[in-house]
Amino acid sequence: MHPSILQIWNVYRAANPAAPVDVPISFHFCDNRSDADLCAELVATERKRATATSIAELRLAGDPIPRPGDYAIVTNWAGEAKAVIRTASVEIRRLCEVDAAFARDEGEGDLTLEWWRTAHEAYYRRVLAGSSYIVNDDLEIACERFELVMAV
Image (cartoon, rainbow, N blue to C red; front, side, top):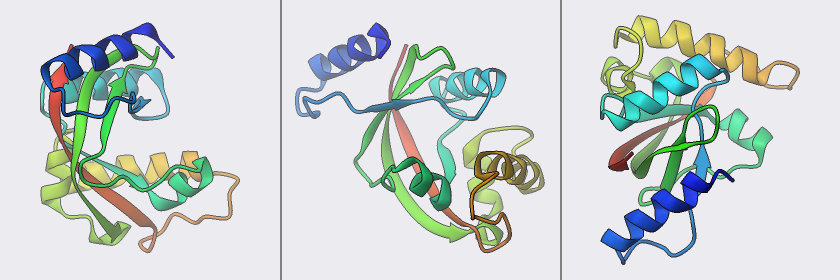
């Protein structure tokens, strides 16, 4: 764990003593440095307020589906803490049910559903390659909206 993760959580907790004592999960978005660093910056500037993880990806990683109220620390690719977020809502949708409003809230690319779908289908294919999961319109997605509660 990068030391900045504990540092940002301690600073957040000092200002918000009702927050959990235990350090929440930390993660970077995406599967490459360029996109991960960009997404961390988009979160820190509040342009990115949502994320869409496939349920298949969560299952393969052994991770739970996020729940409203969950905290997480967003890092860049190098693992340096950039922001603390709190999950506001989670809806399980099929890939074909993701709408333009959600794509816009994700804050990536040109903010259109077309861009979102192209980028996310490619991502899902990469991270699910070699598994028994198929990327199609029925792929279940955890559509998570979150709020930025602290940025570095």
